[in-house]
Amino acid sequence: MALQEALQAHLQTGLTTVSRCWGIRRSDGLRYGFTEHDRDLAFEGFVFKAETGLTALAIEQATGLSIDNSEALGALSDAGITETDIEAGRLDGADVTCWLVNWGDVTERSLVFRGQIGALTRAGGAFRAELRGLSEMLNRPIGRVYQKPCTAVLGDAACGFDLDGAGYHTLLTVEEVQEGRVFRWASLAGFEDGWFTRGALSLHSGEAAGLRGMIKRDAFEADGRRVVELWEPIRASINAGDEVRLDAGCDKRFETCRLKFANQLNFRGFPDIPGEDWQMSYPKQSGVNTGGSLRG
Image 1 (cartoon, one colour):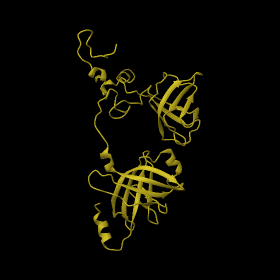
Image 2 (spheres, rainbow, N blue to C red):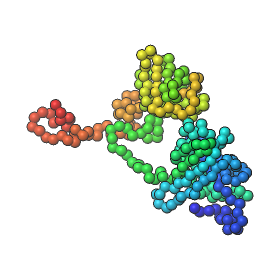
Image 3 (spheres, one colour):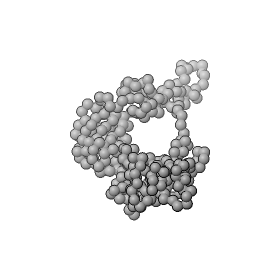
Image 4 (spheres, rainbow, N blue to C red):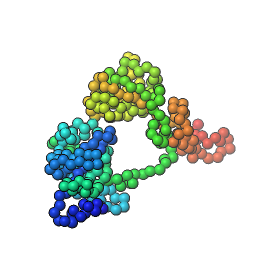
């Protein structure tokens, strides 16, 4: 950890006025600030709240690709992190930054940790957050995977498809929802059966605004209603009248990319890669040697 020169000079005086400040930024842009000091501090676009009950264990940092980690302990409160936010998953993967700061002059500060929230639990009116450093990203496998299905995520930079185009999304209000996972509408005109399977459902209003889930099934029921079922429930309250958006789904096949999205030039799979039967084929005198299945 390289300290700012002004802060280093302050520490060398032997009479210090330092504390740690933690900044948390959620994926939706909402920010939280906490400090161990007994009064609020402000810098870097954060207001660090005092008396939050936040404490932190020692930060483990190392050279190389070892994962830097720490843990933060704090109290749940309506003014800060709430149990509802944790249960809804709003803090999953949130960015975390920690500074060592001279509270007498906050311009004297040094960055000591930057990473993301890993496992986060709550119990007894408190939360416990595992903090993972940036080096964890370097331990993830990267590179192309040689397989028939597309490896891109529909709408991401590799895919390049614009889901905001007409016919590939719809905005509607919730009519019926069960367990935050099964949604039903009297009709969903203009979209064929299964159009949204493997797509996404995102909430745009209500208590669950900003949350999203992946669609497991999109089908017509016997009574003519349309049902959209998610793989996992939305972990927040959803009520009739809340606005949701449905995005079209993709099954990663080349035919779907070409016919449904006309995006075959950006297909990130290998549709012509030989299968196992072709690799196990052998020459023979009779029959048609196409490299196809050996059965029959």
